[in-house]
Image 1: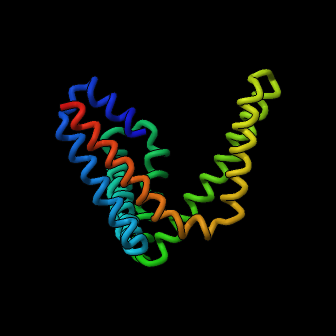
Image 2: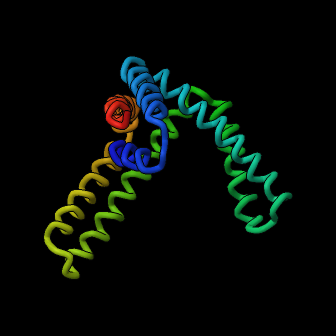
Image 3: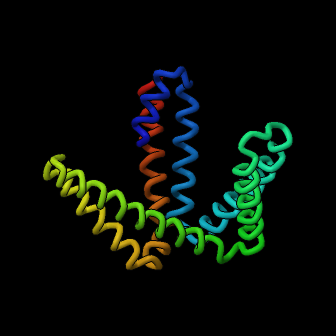
Length: 177
């Protein structure tokens, strides 16, 4: 994923030092998630709550500037404000709930994608597509069967991915230079 970002950065004129800063930020974030996953998750989810609150307010205000799609803007704005307020009012259990919801979404998505791949395999897409579909369904079921375990492990996994992505970004930045 990060390699694709670096390739797009090279072609779009993004300065190498900006990719380097992104990599350094990811490494720092990764270290924080690995060293103190619980506290870092609490802080990260608080930032998400603030973000949702601000975006929700802007979405509602934007109705007065451009009334097209006002129903969706109002719905997403109210949802953002409510989610932001709930997260900010409950900082200790919000990371658990947000993590659980993320794991549930990933599990359901894995099952849906897996079923689609299996259908495509039976329609002639080949055994490779069928194998990917079966693996995706199995992973989705495992995620849904062990929501708590994966929710607890999520901050550590995010930390490891951030560390790897940060190192790849730093290397890519120096290759761009």
